[in-house]
Image 1 (cartoon, rainbow, N blue to C red):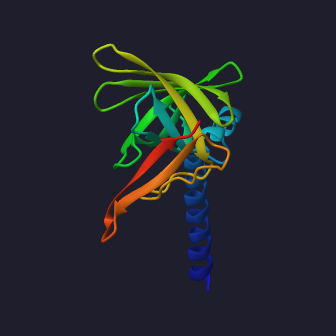
Image 2: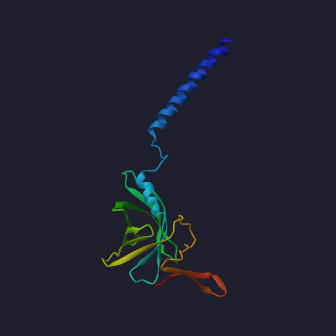
Image 3: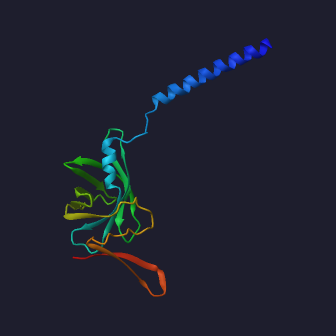
Length: 184
């Protein structure tokens, strides 16, 4: 009986020691229970955006999936960008507080730089600077607040100045492409 009591006390001491080590480690790991106020406010940028570059006929799309705080406290957005009728490239890019809104800066794989500054909850204005130095205007129109889904074409709100058309051959649905048309 005495052996059981000694062994039981030893097991309790070992259990308490292990629990205190685990608790100490938990205190060292930063908590991600809640987002910072800046992160929460920047979540308004999450969604699918149609991007009009200058007077180009071919529309581009920017899907912002999430916004998180980086190691230095700056905000980092994760998403995809490219032509609306083609596969989008994945990017992470910085977002900064700017006046009453936010400013973003995305460098493409071709070293072009796309910048945008929020004008309202549904619109951003900026510029598209090509590697050779040419600068074009950029207008971002929010298509939906839903986080982007790969392969899904954004649903354009009825009041938007952009309409998406699906163009295909009568016998080949898979040959089709989505084309964004600017409606004035």
